[in-house]
Image 1: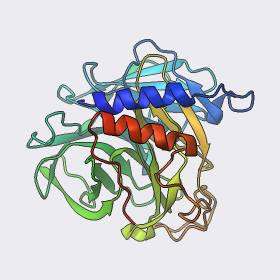
Image 2: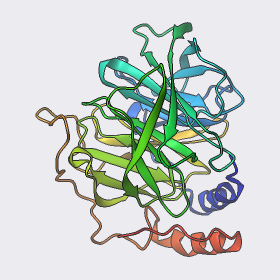
Image 3: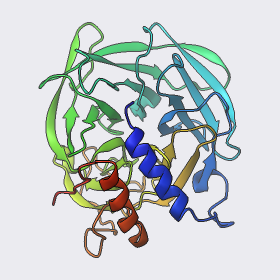
Length: 329
């Protein structure tokens, strides 16, 4: 992960604008938590459990092994370690998502060479019904992109249709790639670009009702109406300043967005999700137009920035040669 410039900028910003957590914000569970497992030093993906309230699944992104960690958000402690069986050696695991039928999807989709691997992998396994250290068989899928190799850190599964999507990671913005209706374990799965994403994306998540798509980057985020896959940009996300912002997940009820970062003892911070993202009854399989607040009107000049951080961020990014974090539209 050649992210040193973005990481340094994030660390400087976090140091300048860090605010001590209030008693309310420092609560347990979906109010945020700190990962206390010393083995988890590069938490790169985050997904709220479907079967175990208060549990979030995470993983390291490289140099670890085929492991998933179930972290209790009330304590920050790991309550189960799952070892994936039946797959090869993971290369650069960047994302995790849970789809219909409580199936966990793990995206071994990173490419530190900037898009050189001829293929990447997705692993699928059932979410364990019992939280304990165990080995679970997983299915491995070969993934290729229609327009050639690329780097990616965002994998998400639609909660109603079960279709798998990937967003590639490009500084000037990337694309949403759609996988086949059903993944095949016997051949290559070709992912096709279907929409533009206006962000240097490090992770993304569907709301529990499938109506919204939240995409985060190092310094900001955007949310879209899903509209059956014909996405429509709705507004900016209030992404917290983190040393190396890597992951995002909706809380199980859809009222919070949980933002994670890498590093030993990293924190997962909670922010209110845009309106219309909750898992309330009556949501359609393909999603629909959200009534959410937090739209583009009245937003700042850049996604997710506090007003005072804009000037510092601009100076840091210019200093280290990051060309821009431009938001289209």
